Amino acid sequence: MKSNRPVNLSMGQVLEVNLKSPVAIASILHRLSGVIVFLLVPVLLWLLDKSLSSAEGFAEVQEIFNGFFVRFIVWVFVAGLIYHLFTGIKHLLADIGVAEELQSGRTAATISLILSAIGIVAAFVWIVL
Image (cartoon, rainbow, N blue to C red; front, side, top):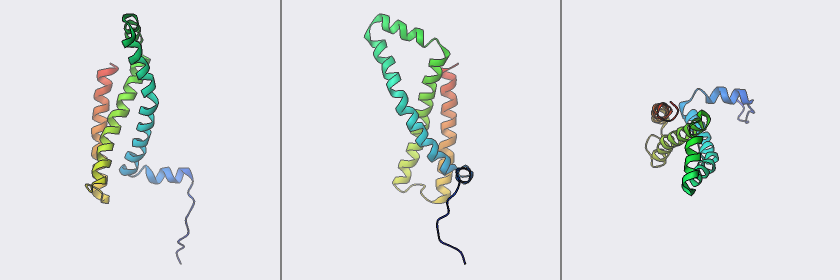
């Protein structure tokens, strides 16, 4: 007889199950990109404020952006925005009833992952290189 009791899975088992599904991957990365964007907004607002404060502040920000590390941080922010945008659109479409079935949801998740990857690579070339 099959038991209907819940089974506690280890974190490894949970990841093993979830990493096989593009829908789960898209959902987890959507949350992660939201956290990244949320955490980097204050840093970029500070840079914007500094650049608008005076001509010297603008020159300082330009000097800061000459470094690889800051351009990489900006790229991480833009990559998070791009990913969050595409998967957010996918989630909004699912909320109104488009691609909410299993197979169409997988297809929509795969398309959003591919479009995001293309946008993130283009942003890397534009910002970092």
